[in-house]
Length: 114
Length: 113
Image (cartoon, rainbow over all chains, first blue to last red; front, side, top):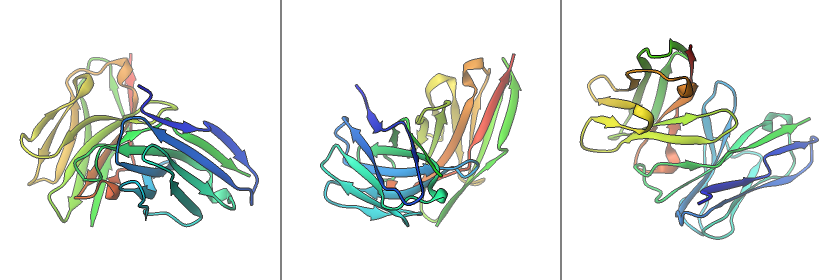
């Protein structure tokens, strides 16, 4: 059982380049999330999708777009990468979008923007 | 509004000693509380959660946490540390919507032989 799978694991971009981070879950979860993790700052929510067909902004959405492609897949796109977007990005899913439903995380994508 | 404060960004204990990682929260609604562990180059894994019911919650790997509403705390403990417990630990609080979870800044646990 793979859980939450993220690709790629590592990526280096130049300022202004674009890329899409891919995420897929095989647990039949309804809700999916994108977080970024920066040293000493915990995790900050970028976007989430409570259910297939819906997306909502989180705490730090600027510079990002998302697509909930189907129930399994939730992608994050950087249209014009900036050095401030250097971070580790985590995708997560939960069975329901309710607060008592724990998050299941992928292993992350380590992105460097030069 | 909700927030989480983890006291101590780094905690060091000797193998076999008590582990105590502190977490205080604020929440305008009855909270759901979680502890997650992150090993190097991996994502976060759920250790334990408090939703309703018993205030002493047992998790994986011998960890437990007690929800104390009067102190707005949810401290994580383990009676005897093992070398494999070395990792970063995150406390999180959630209200009615999991998409609105708030994470603490994390505590790095070091276990000395």
